[in-house]
Image 1 (cartoon, helix red, strand yellow):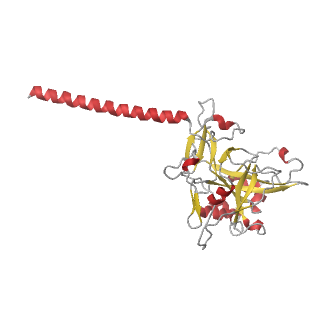
Image 2 (spheres, helix red, strand yellow):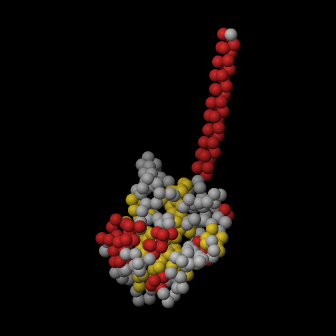
Image 3 (cartoon, rainbow, N blue to C red):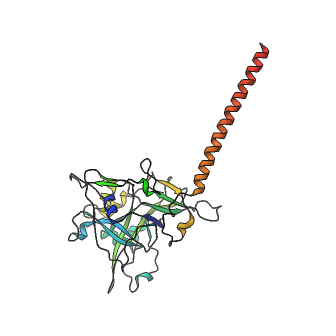
Length: 312
C-alpha cells in the first residue's frame, strides 16, 4: 500500500525535474502547470503528504489541448478519488480510495470506467513511507522512507546535497524522483470542481516483501512513463501490462513523527539516529574483532615459533 509520500520541490523546480525529451525533439521541455481546482486547496511542498492533501500529478495534455503547449502537464490534485456518483459534500463519500489494487481495477465499479476513459496519471514524489507489518513481535510498526537510488553523495533526506540543475540540452540533474502509476477523476457538483487521484498498488516482490505485502506500481523508465500517459495510442489493457514490481529501491528507517499527518517538517524523512549509532557501533565492533583476530594470529605464530625454537 502507500499511505504517505514526500515532495518538497516547489512548482518551478518540479517542472524542471519532470522535464522530458519528446521523440525526435532536439531538447528537453518542461510540462506546463495547469491551474488548481480543489476547493481552494493548493499544493504545499511537504515532507509528509497524507490523503486529502493536494499534490502535483503528471497527466496527458490530450484532454487539455486548449490549455497546454506540452504533451504532458502537471495538475495539482487531491489524494483520494471522489466517486463520480457521489452527491453532496465530497468529504462524506466514506470510501477508502487512496490506493487501488491493480488486480481489481478492470472489475471495479469505480476504477474500471475511469481507466477506460483515459484517467491515467503519474504521481511524482521524492519518496513514500511504509510501516513494517511483517515483524509480528514488535508492539509498534516501524516506519521507513522509500525512494529511488541516488547518485553518489546525494542524500535524499538532505536537500543541500541535491545539486539540482536543469538545461534544455541535458535535462534535469539532481535528486531522482519516484513516478507512481495512478488513476484520476474529475468530480463536480453545483459549485465545485475537484481533481482527485488514487495510487495503484500491487503485490510486493522480494525488494519490499520483508516490509509490507503491497507496494506502489512504480514506473522507473521514461518509456514506461510515456506509455502510461499516452492515452490516445496505448489501450487500457496494454497500459496495465506495463506495471511491474520495481526491483531497485533505497530506504531507511525514520521517526514515528511521520505517524501524525500534521507533522510536515523535514524531520519526518530523516534517517533514524539509532541506525547511525548502530552503524557506528557495528564499525567499532568489526574493528575490535579484526584487532582481536590479528592479536590471536600473532599469539599463535609466536607460540609456534617458540615451540620450534625449543625443538631445534
